[in-house]
Length: 336
Ligand code: UFG
Image (cartoon, rainbow, N blue to C red; front, side, top):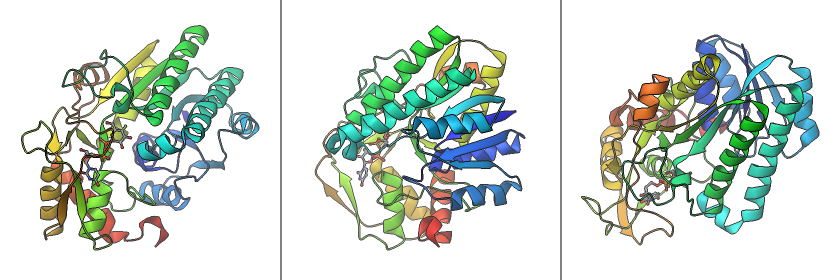
């Protein structure tokens, strides 16, 4: 069964590719390398002993994406990862974010319609909930994103649901909480040019690449005053995509699921866990709050547990140990 993966060379895609190949799916990957490199595709092939088809294409170019659908007949489903994803950058360059994420998705949806592909898994984010009123967050919580990146994810969801209704598509939207960690082989992992997120930053400080972590505020209304998030191991997250494909095979309609553990950790707890993983203290200082941050975000993953038959299995130790292994084995990411 053939699956088209956009953003196929990226962090979450590469882990998803491994899980799909293990289940004998045939993969067609598309990427424009805006935040990824081909090496990750080769590593996935090495890790699984399987080959994928690859197309370098930018979703903003409708002809380029059309060509992929023309060349690859009988695509069963699309998993759409390709997007710009840095919150801060999205505030500075909103038009680039809308163009890339919205125009790119529209071109993809149109190519699907033209080629009669009706199954879709969407890589969404807890960012669509903004600052949630109730914790843990359920899927029916109001969507009110607080930055252009979040708005694009919410819009991409809405356009997709409208298209699904009109064209009888089957859709699974996965709203990820905070993906972290790496494959336990140490072959694939997160390779940011500049780390915006907590764990890749901690990891580079632990490796001596950066001097210290700045903790963005210790006066939040949380037990130790630092921000609490629902960190989810990227391999658990990858497996949720396999379950989403199974869901679509067996059910018609549109479904939305939170993908998290339901358990939160503070910034200081993450730094302590990482210090244990790398065997030395990770230096940090307390700094001011980061604009746009919230105190606490936690998933209620029970809908995914019950309806997808998916549950996060990996805990904090696996998250930090795998992140550290990836960092140690690949000090310059894929550019070794
Ligand atoms: N933090 C620090 N120092 C850093 C980086 C982060 O203290 O150098 C803190 C943040 O203030 C927050 C926590 O660590 O309390 C996690 O921050 P991240 O930047 O890793 O993650 P966010 O929760 O802010 O955002 C992430 C993704 C978004 C996604 C969102 C969904 O970056 O794309 O989760 O909740 F939308």
